[in-house]
Image: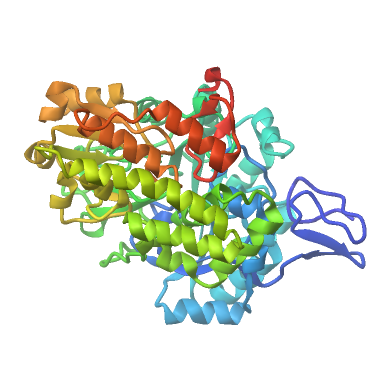
Length: 587
C-alpha cells in the first residue's frame, strides 16, 4: 500500500514500514509507529525555529518527535533522525488537547513543530494543528516540504507560517537526501504562498555547490521575490566531509549574490556576521538587529518600534513585534537541544557504546527524565564535567570505562592547573566564535579553561549574555585589548579571514598587532571529552615557557583508547559524538 504522506511514495507491505521507518501498514491502513508521541515540548522564541519575518521575539511551544523522510548527509538532527529508534524510548504521549493546554499555561502565542520533520509524524501534527487553530493559537512548522499535494491540502488550513528547508535546486541534490526530485518542494512553496501562509525558506549552502543555492533562489523569486531566504552555512556534522563547509566570508559573498534575486536574504550559522539584520533599502538604517543564537537560529536583539524606519519604510514583518524577549533556559530551545543530546551521545561513545540499542537505553532515559535541562549547568567547570561522565557511565553500566576516561582527563588537567600556578604573568585572552565581534559568554567552559590554563579571560568583563555569546562592538573589543585571541572550533572562521575582518573594521588589539590569533582545532573545545586536547592546546599557546604537550601524540592516544581509532588519518569535522576517519585530502 502506498504511503500518502510524502512524495517519496513508499509502497509498504502489510506489517512492514517504509523508508522513514515511522509508518507501518496495519490491516491495509498506513498508521504512525508512535502516534500522539513527542520527544520535546518546551517554549522557545520563534527565531530559533528559525523564523525572521513572523511575530519577532514571540514565544511559541516547540514540539518534536523522531524520524525523518529524508536522510541528508551532515544533518544537525542526526540523533533524532538517523538514530530515531535509539531515542524513541524517550517519547511521551499527549493528546492534542493536552499539548494545547500546555501552550496556554506557558503563555505561548502558538505551537511550532521543528527539529525533525513533521512528515515523520504527519497525522499527529495534523490533529494537533487543527486543535491549536481551533483554540486561537498560531501554528507553524519547519519542514523539507516534501508532502504530497493531498497531505499538504489537509494541513494548509491550519498553518499560519512555515519554514521550508531547501537542500538545493537540482534533482541530483535531492536524490542525495533520498528524495526523487526537487519539483514537489517548489510546487508546495507556491501552494502555501498562494494560500496565504507566511512562507520562509532556508537553503543549505555547501562549499562548491553555489549554483544549487543560487538556482534555488531564482526558483523562489519566480514565486515571489519577497519570500525571505535564510542561507544556512553548512556545518559538517556526522560523516560529512569538512571540505564541504564554506567560510563565513564566502557565505557573505554568496548572500550578496542572492540579494540580486530576492529582497530579504539572511545568513545563519555565522556568529558575528552583520548579514542577519533587516536593513532599510531606502536609507540603510538597521530596522531589526539580530545575532547568532545557536545552530540554525538567531534572536532579535534590537528593533525599531513597529519595524518602521525613521524614513518611513516598513519592514515586511507579519504579526506584531513582541515587546519582551523570552529567554530559553540553558540548552533548551531550537536546535541547541539537539546539541545537548549530541553531547550526551559523545560521552557515551567514548565509554565504548556504539550500538544504537544500547545508546537508546541511556539516551531514552536522560531525555525522558529532563536530564538536558540540568546538563547546561554541568558543562562549565572541569569537576562538574567529570561528574557528568561518571553519572552517564553509571547509568550505562560502564563504570570502569568511565573511571579510565576520567583518569585520563584528570591527570592532564591537574598538570595544567599546577603548571599555570607557576606563571609569572596571566595574559589577556579573548575567546570568540566565528567572527571577532561575537564573544562567548563569560561563564562558558571555554572561558574557564582559559583561566585554568593561566590566562585572564577578558570575556568575563562582559555583562550581556546570549547563546552561546553576544555581539559586541569594535570599541568594546578594542577596550578589552586582548593579547591572545582564540577562535572556537565550533562554527569557526579561518584565522586569515578573522584577521582580514579585523583590518576592515579597525579592530586594533595587541593580539592582532602581534598576529596572536589562533584557531582551536575542530572538536577540541566544546561538546565532547575531546576538550582535553583543546585545554592542552590553550596551555601550550598561552604559556609556551611552561607547557609543551605533544598534541599529535595526545590526539593519537585519546583516539586509540576512547574511540578505538588507530593511525593518524583524522578528519576535523564539527561533530560532537565521534571524529571521522579519513585521508588528509578529506580536509
